[in-house]
Image 1 (cartoon, rainbow, N blue to C red):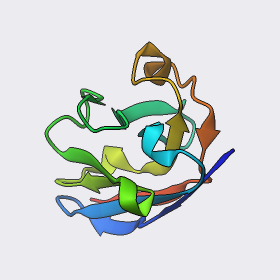
Image 2: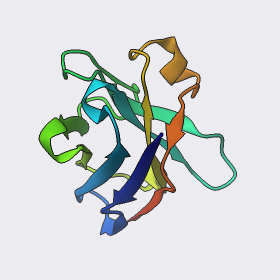
Image 3: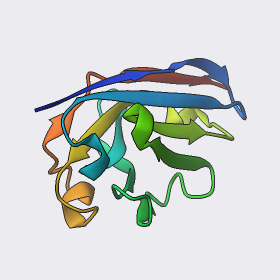
Length: 125
């Protein structure tokens, strides 16, 4: 079992930045693909970014490419999401996720095993 706890959300103005963190507990974190999803009110949950266990494979949603950066520190069991140049449409609850499988199509479909509780990001215009 893997437990995920997000932090770092908040209220920020358009163009601002935030860094989200996700602390994982449990075995074998360093072997898990990790990533982030988000869900805005009234919308379906959508894929944001994913990173393989060694960090060599990274995928981003088109909507965040060039603005968001995913990273991980396996020594700290933590994955990060740096959010830059934030826009009002980035407002959502952001969820950390993990899975033993690689960063393939399962991530785009949201078919991953472990989920955090979410952290709210609100971008004011």
